[in-house]
Image (cartoon, rainbow, N blue to C red; front, side, top):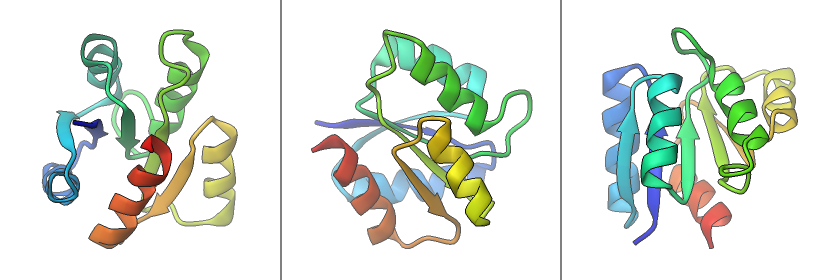
Length: 120
């Protein structure tokens, strides 16, 4: 089963994204900040990471950069899922190494399709 790490500091959003992905047939592991996410990635080796941008301590952009610079995780696709919906935000996310940039609000289908496109 394909495993997705969801990184989101807002618990209601974390639950929503997790439920959408479980409904799409994915195993979900979670982290509530980017530091926890880095530990989870090294321990659990998820097939993809879905991350928010605005989080305390380290942003999703910085998390993406760290994952892409590490030889052990650089092949792990990152999907940024953020309320930052300006074109410059999307371009910056892609420049940091994100495979896809999804803006909130999103539908279950948009999220599942985004993950499906990077793990198959």
